[in-house]
Amino acid sequence: MGTLRWFAGGQERRERAIFLINQMFSEFDSKNANPLYQVLDSYRTELKFDGTSTPYILTRMNIDISKVLLNNNIRLSSTESSQLKELRALSHIRII
Image 1 (tube, rainbow, N blue to C red):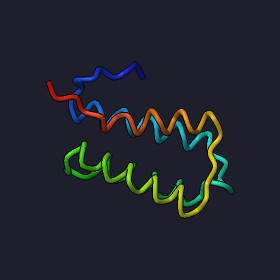
Image 2: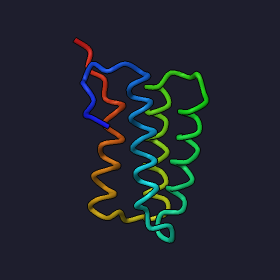
Image 3: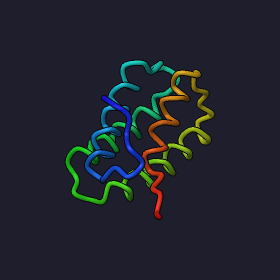
């Protein structure tokens, strides 16, 4: 999947988020990141089947990911960290 333009619409962001979550699942250390896996899985399902606004879902996902990482003291590898950074960047919307 290619890079996302900064002016991409909600559907493109939604598809990219699902792609990135699936990619992260294939590389997760399941012992360390089980709560994070659960959060990402619930948002992947919501992105696939819910009609709610994509930016709203992504914003809530970012908050929940932060809570899970802090509350469970989860340390990510550099690869996982860069993937998560890319996933979180999908919620950044520029208004000009």
